[in-house]
Length: 449
Image (cartoon, rainbow, N blue to C red; front, top):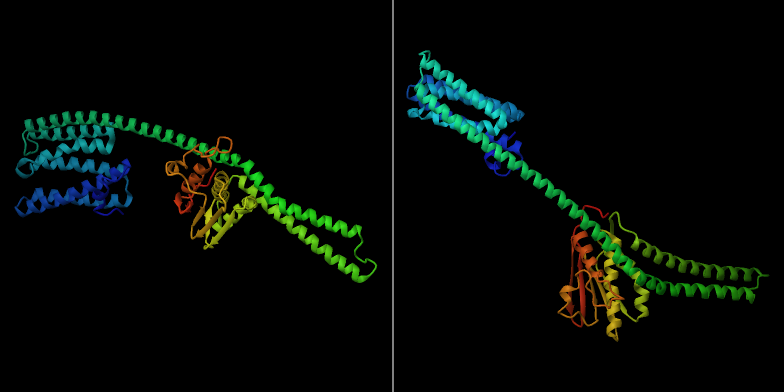
């Protein structure tokens, strides 16, 4: 049920036309109940019993209509009831005249009320019914059938002016309705255009993500080669060792002790080979998942994201004599698009590696720190020039030569962190290097396409 005061509180807040009508009917009913109650008590107190009783009856009808409308909120019924009550009130005012015969002036609100609640056509019909009924009472008074507080000429002039006002309100309502429909069409057109542009931007963003990943593919393959070199070399060494043992017949297979020693030796070496193969499989799985577009988010710790990223690039970093210092202070599971966050970490690490090579840093070092929902990646590569540090997140801006840089890596990293994960990606020169700070917020509810 709508409270007594809600019509006044929400009249200026509602954007729905039906709700405006509901609040308007409630407000007008309450105003009518209050004022008619006061007039009824006033007239009965000063001995005008007939007028006071009629006002009391209309007040009671308004009260019944108000509570019935509160329960059912039937706009059609409520508006028709108000129209009829206004007609009854107009007859009462013609007979009584109200206070100093000024009550009739309240009836000028009828056309506005009719057009607002009933629309253009039916509103005009209600106005004509109002005029005809009141004019009929004026004619009866002219023929001395009943007695009115106003002369026939006064009622006629009032009804003519009311009719002229109704025509003006009718055309004004038509203009307003036409403008409202045009505005609605414009809003719908604008909403459609915005949706189209949003979809275009979303597709463009996904294209840039894929373009950025493809630009990294050659670098990733080089990293995989470094990562595989050690386990492949170990497998080759182990198999050569086993082959040599067999060819030189180093085990006395004609004794039980020799067979047991041979079995232990071969089983251990095969177990080592299996471990090397598992390492290769893990690396290629991480590489494959990195290039597979995310459809759903996963709950994972930032430590695992960093470790997966390092599993791809670590061998390449070590090969360039880059010291990696890792500090993990959080085990919190965070909902995220893990392959995209791997892309962010790999972008920053690869930029540091390229910067070390370009500047020929003697003792290169990367320090990775995880705290709560944040990652900081610091390197001692000399930092970024102050005149370009504000531009490094711009699309297609790169400090590398055209052959080695696309200018999409950090731009896409910022989109991934700030738009896909509601976080922040910031950079600052610190000590003798640069520090990238990643702070993750709550994941967007809409999954990536």
